[in-house]
Image 1 (tube, one colour):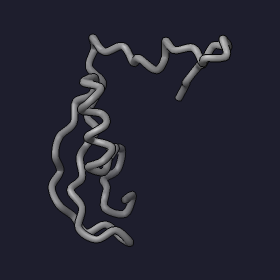
Image 2 (tube, one colour):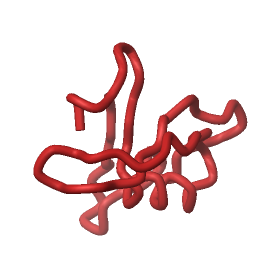
Image 3 (cartoon, rainbow, N blue to C red):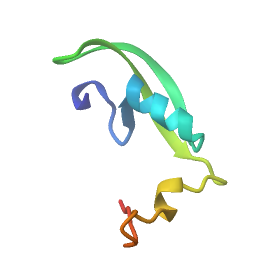
Image 4 (spheres, rainbow, N blue to C red):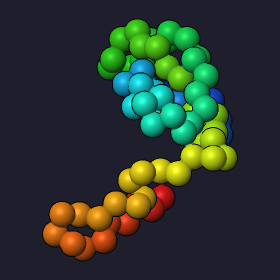
Length: 73
């Protein structure tokens, strides 16, 4: 999807947008439907920002083994 994106913008697929909508912590803008190489026509979204009041539930999780889990990046 990089070939249909714009410089310094994060473009995500509809599936990724749905996951981010479920978390309710990100601001997304529908970009529209584009022909994505190897995928055909897809509706894509811009990832605009993370909401200021959002705390990612995955960052405060421990694995069942008792070892802490850390996600970065």
